[in-house]
Length: 330
Image 1 (cartoon, rainbow, N blue to C red):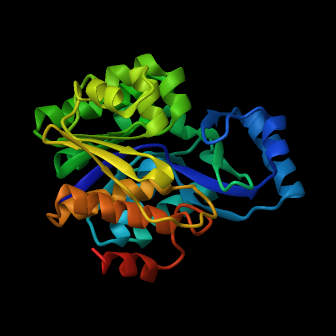
Image 2: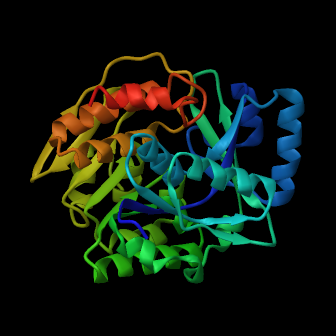
Image 3: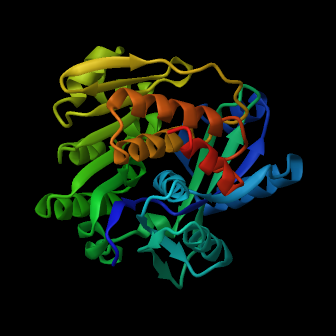
């Protein structure tokens, strides 16, 4: 297997986006801006209702880590994705999209079940709320993981969504143990405020493994640290990493590095859809680091790329040229 920059472990999902009203979100009893899990019966029922009432705005392969790796591949980096899909049409589309942009695949394909789907609900304020049926991703097992793929990477990237079951949390811990045994650098994204709150014990088991970089947004940082300010959150997370990135929407981002906390502002943009903002931020930051840019430059570039992706629907640009244009500004 060819040496890669990053091997990412995460849920293999397809995103289906809908523009809905705030009243509809209230009716569904979902927390705006967060992710909640759904079962297959409710998922199919809701999908049919939304398609009939609103129509699908966009449908594309998704998943937090997969989104970040997709962007990195489009930027020219050599990356590998590991996850679980079914041998169905959605699963085939997911894997083909990864291979199309040159990503290496360490995906496990199974005969039974269906590939997971995330219903992404966009309200008039452009915020995205996610209702996810994990499908076969929820059955990701240690046997599905390619040890070689992790060992042949510079970084291992873990998504916080894996803590939503004990089995997938054990998979994440197994991957981290492989990384530790082979001196592979480790990155985690905390993924979602609700995930941090509802599965905090599992999340703490993960971050106790220690990471080279921790990515999170402001609310995730507050939830994991049981605090209500950036400084306290950083003091807590510093027990588990010496490099902490906290995104803060239109307020830019905070970075803790070399015992120094810095705030980096971002340009004002008019968002259309906030889906994938954090995934793109992570990808752009790691791209910038790969090109030996300093921390401040890396955050500025990540802010710029994140600001671009929220001006379209979905977590991915439609054209490779869009990624090339951003790369040229690095």
